Length: 74
Image (cartoon, rainbow, N blue to C red; front, side, top):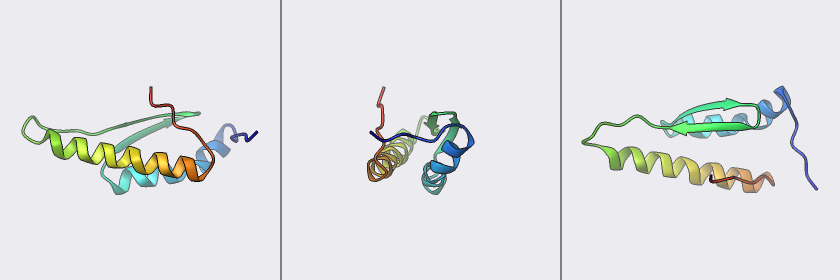
């Protein structure tokens, strides 16, 4: 069984997730053991924004797997 540090230790542990989001131009908000990622788009460029968000989620999921954590897609 693997645990995840709580509180500010968790934020340090997952700081790489924020770096992934920023590198890909995705907004991210983190709180405790939860986070939100989102993008802003205009009606004429939704595919561009969708692609950035999906790439970000795939990279975050890979990072989580590499660090023995799970992503809850819901």
